[in-house]
Length: 218
Image (cartoon, rainbow, N blue to C red):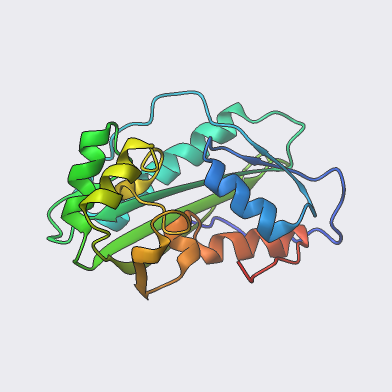
């Protein structure tokens, strides 16, 4: 939802600070490589227990609902030192389309998710939302992107090793398309950035507002 336009800043200012309201090391690293220190990014999760979406049977509705909760919560907790709050959420739809997959909470749940996904195309939805910290009306900019991907079978030995060393932690569906699972990952439709955790248009609108020239080679 976009209530009104946010005017762009004229120049990138060293005082600009982006609060990435997330504990995701992957998302933080993506911004570091994409923005090349043009602005300061502080990655820190929000306080609160993320509620289960009421629309958990619909991929787009569920990711939108979770992202909306994140940005609203972030705005209620943001301090004056930050220029903008940035949040993102990623969910995966089971190949059957019957249920959604978030981050596994144990090795066995990660194994079950991966065995369900391997060999069959599946949809990934990412919602990215941001809002400036200088307007009492706080216009929220929300963007959703859906991608389609497929995982090839890495074999039992490799999969067991991957699970044992914890590569599944913090990853929707239990796999990191930009890391250890990349040799067995194929994107069929959409962008890799959306699979890794950000809607492209979400970052692009923020970059335009802040005057950031992104490194789009990643």
